[in-house]
Length: 199
Image (cartoon, rainbow, N blue to C red):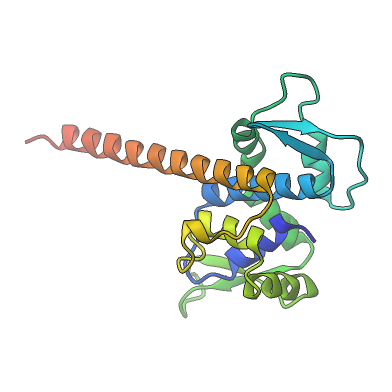
């Protein structure tokens, strides 16, 4: 199990949906934090410095490690989040559905309602829930960035590792940037619609 998978399961358990773009950025951050924990990478300022070869028994972690930029100057954390995070939420969902760890959950009583998925009661879900209920600092900090945990303030992260704190801050900045892009597009679309509507 990885922090990214735990975060994805917690996000699927929420009553309100989390934006796929936001979640994808947070999942990329979670993968990077686990790579730091495994000794596969180090953080030097805002750059990701790959370490020696590591045996990673998780498919997504292996893919993340294989995609690291090994030549100097090394990749910036923010650039990594955008590159690695592209469609990452959908990839996790597909993998968990394939493994039978997610099941369809229709909203409402109609058989043709919008389809959502929810985690199946597995050991993986119980482990993720345990970490969540214990307010494990890394999981809680990443969840807070994507508005899963509204009760926790930004200064209550409880993170004591500088590299991890740097990654969480970068995820936060990327999510804020994504929201700014969304708002700009909404304003542009509204202006365009008004132009066609006329006075």
